[in-house]
Image 1 (cartoon, rainbow, N blue to C red):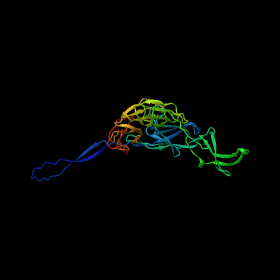
Image 2 (image 1 turned 135 degrees about the vertical axis):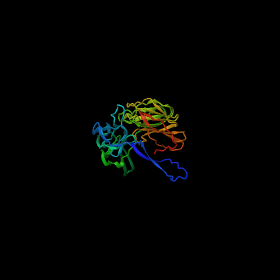
Image 3 (image 1 turned 60 degrees about the horizontal axis):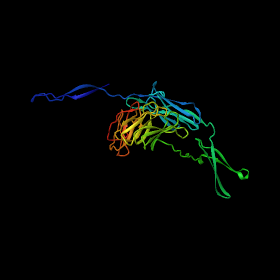
Image 4 (image 1 turned 45 degrees about the horizontal axis):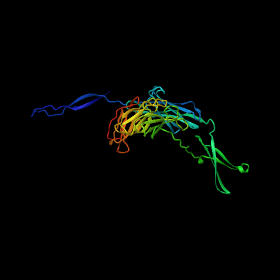
Length: 390
């Protein structure tokens, strides 16, 4: 509560003509009490990192990274934590504020790390909304060592080039492993009692990284969009596709070896287009938002945490929302939803608790932003002529 002194000019008195009194200007003091919105105080936070199942694991073991964010003894449930291995980003996870799968005030990431030594940190980004301001903080580093349980199998191929008296022999050693083969290759003359012709070292300079053979995976219909996320919390990435040629999206759970289980389909409007993944209701479980090429509706599938999705909730975007983006547009630690809709002509938006502008790449697109209202629901949209994120 603030008091403001407003000085207002009073009405001039009426003075008869010829009066000896001089016409003057009088002022009266008026005290007005105004309610001035106060900015929330910035709360200091601490971030603590735990790594499971331990600081030394064998290759292929799923490692659980859990960051706990606290502000003066109170669990922080808004915002995002970034996990890093040294300077390399491992992934981001939102803080949990509801549900029973994860502890409230924690951000959780499951993954497999390659063989070798790792130095893991967790960084909380903080929040900057008018109602809640939490300062950023970072954890101490935790070391994790990943060891190979057994040597990886290899295959060796020999090749030659040149002419008699001036041959060049080369050997290629291949391994399907996160660690490149090391050591030496021996060249033997098998026609001469395996006479050793020479040795050559395997070096990083000669290393060649490549892809395995293409393995097609069937989906519900012609595929347009695809995103990867861990939908069942096993530390293995799964796939979600939009089936543009049908009226479904497909979920393919990963096996951890680059292959996937048979697709499971979920009903959505015809011509499903772009899609995005994020925790929209704060329970630590990935959810899916899907755009449409045939209607004005955005479909939101909330995840159950076991690889299945709930029935879609739909939201009217006002245009044809072909593409969708999930991000925290207003800094309140809650994920919002933006759509880039074709055919609307003007730039348009939907806003949550604060206003912002979003611009699409071309004038023929429109863009809409919805603020999260809790439970995976979004607030109603607002329209504006300009569309650029500021």
